[in-house]
Image (cartoon, rainbow over all chains, first blue to last red; front, top):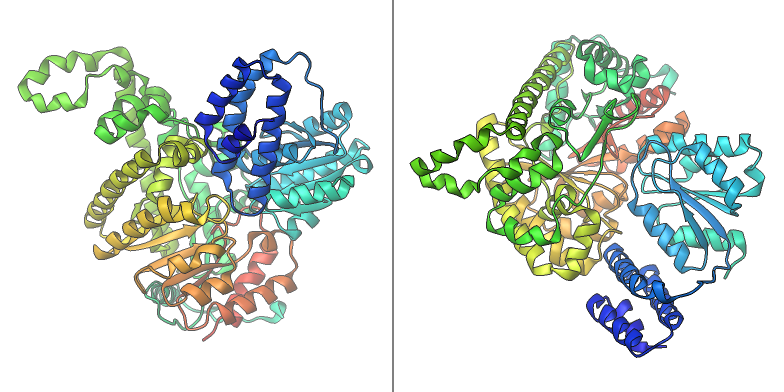
Length: 210
Length: 425
C-alpha cells in the first residue's frame, strides 16, 4: 500500500496522484494494490463528506482523479473480482426529471460504502425500474428527483413496482431537495431523505450492513 | 373553520381591491407593516392542471391561458398573482441547447427544465478574461444555440475597431450559416416581442379584475457571479473542479462578471423605470459548498453585487433556493431594509429571527403541504407563519418556490383564506 497515493487522492492533489500512479506502475507495483489504495482513499473522502468537511467539489474532484487512475490501471488488471458485499441497489432519477447531481452523489457514496450500485441515469421510466428489478435483483430501489413533478413520477414508479408483484421484494427510498415526509407518504415509499448520508444509513439499516 | 370563513375582500370593487392590494404588497417591499399579511400566488403549471389543457398549450394559446388565469385568481382571491414565469419562443427560435420546454425536448406535459452543459471549457478562461464579448459571440453562442453555429467563422470582433478597413470583412456575414443565424436572431426577437405583448396584455387584464402584478418580477435578472460562471457556462461539474484547479482564474472571471452585471442592471433600470432586480441563487446554499469555499468564491462577490445595486437605487431580491440555515448570519451583513429574500426550504422562523430586520421575506408554505397535506395542517402552518414570520410586517406569504404546480386547489383555497384570517395585524 502506498500511503502517499492514498494521501494525494484524499487530499485533493490530483496531479500528484496521477504521477504517483505512473511511478508505481513503472516500478512494477501490482495494479490491484493501486486500486486498493484508491478504495482506501475514497473511504477517507466519504468519511470527510459525512463529517461535513468535504463537499460536492471534493467528491467530484476525487471521482475525476479516480477515473484517471482507473484508465491507467485497468488495462493491466486481468479480471477484477467484485468486492461488493453489502447489497445491491438500483438508483435513478424518475421520469420527467433530468437532475443528476444529487443522484450521482448518492450513487457514489453507496458505492464507497460497499454497495453494488446500478445507476439507471435520469428521466427513468417506471417500466425501466421494473425491468431492472427483475434482471438485477436488488434489495433496494432508490428514486431521485428534484422537480415537483418528480413526486408524481415517484408515486407512479412505486405503483408500477407493486403492479409487477415486486413490491415485497424491495425496499424503496426516495430522495431529493424537495422531498419530505409528506411526499414519502404520498409516493408510498419506505423511507426518504434530502442528503446522501440519510441514503447510506437507510441502506445499511435495510440490509443489515455495517 | 374555513367553511364558514367570510372573505374580508368580498363585495369590494376591482378598483378598491387593486388599490388595497397594491398598498399591501408595497408595504412589504418597504419593510412596513401592512393591514394584513399579503399572499402571492405563482400559478405556473397549475394553470394547465386546473384549466384542463396541456402545458404546451399554455404557451401556445395565450388567450385561453389568460381566461384560465382570471378564473383561478377570482376563485382564490390572493393579493397578487402571476401565471407563467417565462416563455419558450426565443429559445425555440434559436435552438437553445440549455433549456427544455413542454412540446420541445419534452412531452406536452413536461416541466420546463435547465439542462446544464459545459459550454465553456477550462481552456476558454483566458479568452473569456481577455474579451468576454468576442468569446461569447464566436465561441459560446455557436455551442449553446444550434442555429448560431456559423458565428464561429466570423472574424474577431475586435477588428471592428479598424473602421473603414473592416468593411472588406462584410462578405463573411453572407455565408449561409451566418445568414441562418441572423435570421434565427430576427425570429427570436419577434418571439420575444410577442411574449412581451402577451405578458403586458395579461397584466392589464388582471388589473381590471382587481389583481396587481407582482412588480418585483419586473427589472433586471442577474446572478451571483459564481452562479453566472456555473449555470450557463461551466456547469456544475466544471465549476466545482475550477475551485480546486484554477481558483485564480475563476475569481478573475467573477470580478469581470460582477462589473458588467452591475452596468447591465443599472442601465436597464434607467430605461424601464423598474427599481427591482431578481437574483436567483443556486450553488451557494448549504450542501453545495463548504463555508470556506462560500467565503472565498461566493459571498464576497454576491454581496458586492447586491451592495452596488442598492447604491444605485435598485431593490435586489434573491431566491434563496434550497437550505441556507448554516449561512443566514452572512445575509445579515446586507444593507438594512434595502433587499428581499424568497426562501425555499430554509427554517423560515430562523430566517425571520436572523434577517427579519435586514430584508423583506417571502415564503413560508412548503409546496409539499399543499400537494398532499390536510386542510387542518395547512391552516395550522399558515397560522404559525403569520404569527411568527409575519410579526411586524415585511413579510409576504408565498410557497417556497412561488409556483403551485401539483398543488391541491382545495388546499390552496384553505391557505389563502387562512392567511386573510390569521394575517391581520
